[in-house]
Image 1 (cartoon, rainbow, N blue to C red):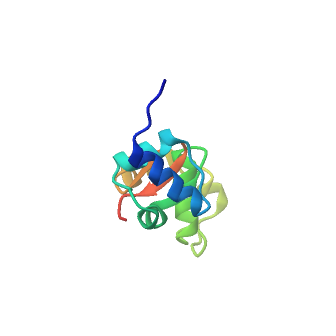
Image 2 (tube, rainbow, N blue to C red; image 1 turned 90 degrees about the vertical axis):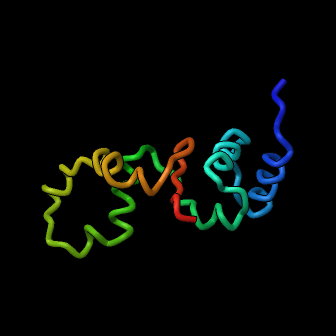
Length: 105
């Protein structure tokens, strides 16, 4: 039988009380990265994505890096988003079970 630490259960319950639902395994891993309060979670959480490449592309789009430029789609369609993640973004963000978080919370 799996034993869940009380602090993991408390944080999981606090997240659920605020409308967020995660498995205790995801909550434990968030806590391993230092996210221990709902406020820290809300500051760090960047959403759920299929993979790191999807997150990298979404982040660049959300920041407006692609919208206001004159880069044609035939070029942007060939950006190696996995490389953008692994060489640039993975130092400032982390992933837990498809959920992405900022290290700066």
